[in-house]
Length: 447
Image (cartoon, rainbow, N blue to C red; front, top):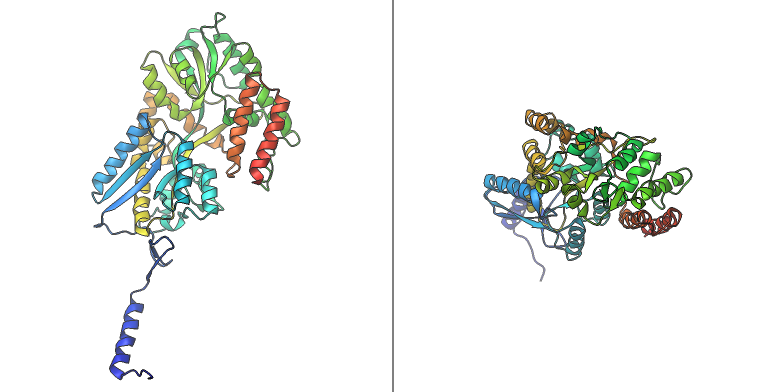
């Protein structure tokens, strides 16, 4: 039997449709059963009376980093009693990456996490993280004045294809640590170029083997700084398919970077260590110099406990210029959580990178200021007056670089670190190491 509509029923239907249309946007459900809003909604808005539990995965498992992050997080949750921040600390960035990849595969990622640039590129390619542009421009976003307060180089570091997918957090760069008491006693000023560094390492080394110039855990980063300082240019070809450090004149500089310190290791001037053993050597005054990031400052200070004065200097320059590697992670927001949960995660992210939070974080940990207003603030000026060498890292920001954002570069990083170490220990020639670096890196880049 054919169904017919009565006039009152028809009128009611029309009124219902009009009422729904007047509501503006509608909600849908994504493929993981989470609430999702249309593009007309503001992604930064959330229900302030609702209880939220935010998972933040990070790698601050010990020391001043852990303490500083925990204190800032408590400050945030005290101000937002409806929000619980679950700090999931892993023992290393390698572990963090492994756990993130597994959680993404299981469709159970955290709302927010520390990420390196090449991780984020892969996550973006697989649609695992969100662009931060809509959050930045939202009602609870960041004004153009606030965005211009961040160091341009650090903002650019967080961009993929011209869009902001990461915001800077714990950024650092490599510096030269030195025992100021020893240098003062021997009337040596901190070296400013590689020739001076090599000479000074020899001067402070004792013939009985009780003290050497430099303790170093070799990595791709020290090699890449030497490569750039000697005159090397790009690390990867413009199409991202092969390495550039073995092409044309770059090959000479790449080989030179492998060879530069090898004779000093052989003569006992440079001591090759593993992992963080260089910190023990420096703190116990077995080595006079060390190369690491500014983030190592708090760990060294805790070990040295005022036994001697130590300072930082810029990495000495070479004929190609003065360079340092930009270290540290950024913050990204992940898909796979509800929109309002991610909005709260954004609010927490904003808090962590605010001027006040970053000022506290820098002083407690030794990381770089990520905002120019922090560096120029009265609070930091007073801090730098007390610890003048702490300004060095920030003064090098314009000379800091990241070799490559490509996901395949991770395999290259591991290979170069191993080959660099083999050359320093006399287990491989620089020619053989460079050939292996090229082959393994190209394989990684094309996967």
